[in-house]
Length: 157
Image (cartoon, rainbow, N blue to C red; front, side, top):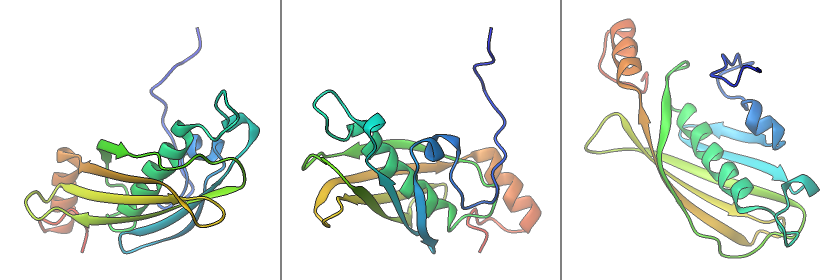
């Protein structure tokens, strides 16, 4: 039987795409200070039954854009995960390249929670999907970062 995971993933650098994102041919255009811009082409393999870009591909792009925005403000190696994600499909994508613009802010009440917003636009700049999400920094990771940095800030600043 094939190994179905979990798999240890070694990425080129902290701000790079994981294997799934590479499979979807996502490209990081920019990432800094809690902001990120990613793009993804609409390929035939990403179509749903009606020939439009699958909503799961759009949602993956938005989620990844927010994750990269998170990484741009966290210490390298910090473990975190998506807690919740809500997306609204406003218009279908029929062709071209879609782009996600993401921004992340720190929670005012919980230093391990990050609030993410992403807007996905089609190649003509039309908004096709807004997305809101919450990310959580792993408790164990936070303690390790605090111990090694001598401070209680998971953002490494």
